[in-house]
Length: 278
Image (cartoon, rainbow, N blue to C red; front, side, top):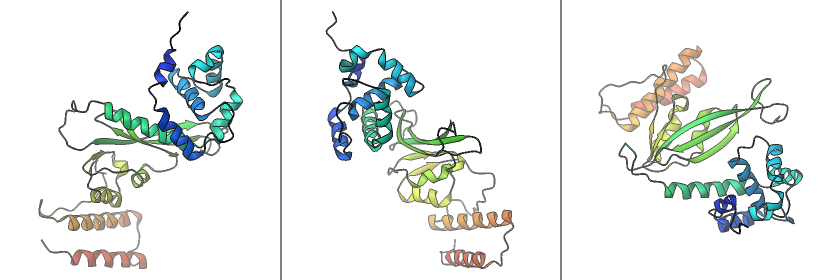
C-alpha cells in the first residue's frame, strides 16, 4: 500500500501557508467557519485549474470522484457544491488576490533573467488587454453589448521572466487607456503598449515617474519638430499638447470663438510664450 503523499498534495506543499494564513486573518476569512476553510476553498479552485474544469459543476464531479481522499488532498473533511458556491460568493476576493501577487513575486525572483536578448538595466513590461465574452442572462452585471456581456482583463506582462506582474479586471466597456492610471510604475523600467494607450497626459505621468514607454504613433497624431535635439522637455510637451488639441477641434468642427476654446488657447499660448525661445 502506498504510504506517500499524492502528487497534488506534493505540489501544494510549495505554497507559503503562513503567508496565506496571515492574509486570511487580515480579512477575517475563516470567521464563523466550521470545516470548509479558505485554504480548502483555494485548493479546490487550484485543482479545477490544473484539471482544466469548465464550470463549478464540472469541478465538483471531478472532486467527488476522489471523495475517500479528501483529507489527504487538502480539501477538508467534506466538500459540497453548496459550500463551494457560498464560499466563492461571500468571501473576500482580496484574500486570494494578495496571495496571488505573493506567488507572482516569488516566481519572478526564481526565474532566470540573464538570457534576455536586449541588454537593459530595468525591467521590460508589455501591456495588453483581452475581452472575455460572458452570457448576459447569467452575468447581468457585465453588460457590454445589447445582447452580450463581457469583462476585460488588463495584463502587465514581465517580458524578461514571462510572468504577469499586474492583473486588473474591469467591465468590457472600460477603455484600455484608463488602466494607465493605476499601474504601479517602476523607476528605470520600460513599458511597451499599442497605440490605443496613447494619451499625452498619461504618457507624461510615466515620464515623471522615471520610467520609459515604447508605443506606436496614431495616424492622426500631429507632432511639430523644428530642430532635432534642441527642444527642451517642457517645450516639447506643451507644443505637442497644443497641436493635438487644435487637430481635435478641427476634426470636430468646434468653433474657435467658443469661450472654453478661447480660454484654453490663451492659456496654452501664454505658456508657450513664457518658455525660452530656441
